[in-house]
Length: 167
Ligand code: S3P
Image 1 (cartoon, rainbow, N blue to C red):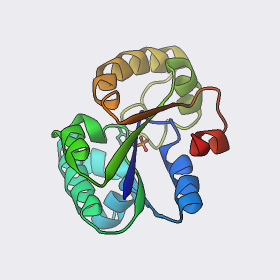
Image 2 (image 1 turned 90 degrees about the horizontal axis):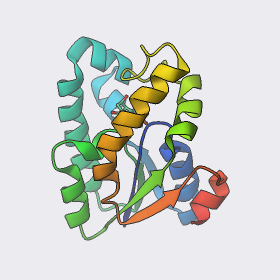
Image 3 (image 1 turned 120 degrees about the vertical axis):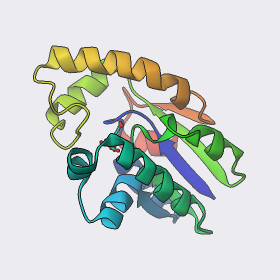
Image 4 (image 1 turned 180 degrees about the vertical axis):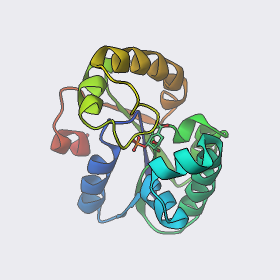
């Protein structure tokens, strides 16, 4: 079985994924980390040296490798993973994959991401909270089309990590 966590940057896919994997005795995998190991460079460097299109192709390839294993895994995807290259369609067609959307509001995601935007190339240039908020509102609106196709949805705004893992 594969539990695939999708959702916007800052929605807690990695921290929740780790705890969920421990709880289920599954192996935890993080897609960004797997891409970084395969490239020998971090996400920011890949974006700046090779560009976003290269990153998206790599993301798609590494995702397919990870879901082709026979292991039980909890996989934290990147915020853009389900929005490119028919990924949502692929995940929904895999019999042993369950997709879960960790759904956060624009306000909560803005508060969280303002404190940790530096390692995220898509938002690191947004200097003020207002600019970040405006960007996230539009970007999340576009991406929600993909996230909302997930089999399960869990609201993260007022929930603890333990509560989300339980849900
Ligand atoms: C991205 C999200 C990031 C990372 C890259 C692009 C996106 O992952 O894959 O910076 O397009 O939303 P997180 O969601 O783990 O921050």
